Length: 75
Image (tube, rainbow, N blue to C red):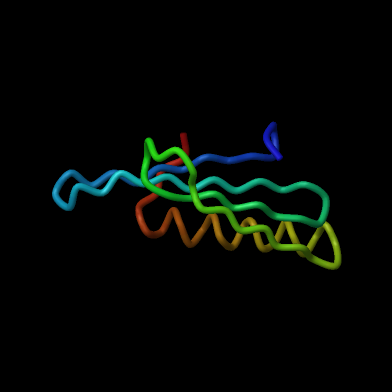
């Protein structure tokens, strides 16, 4: 599910040695989230299906707000 519907965010905090990424992709009524430490080979993945594309889009927007409020920056 890569392409224009995929957004990539990173969180870096040198004080706590935290280098994480978080990606979210929207494809029709499905949302795929990948996350983990930057540079790992097999990141964790979660896929969630919704009844409508609009519900999936709203879920994406909510999750993006949550991540950016925690300090994640879009790349």
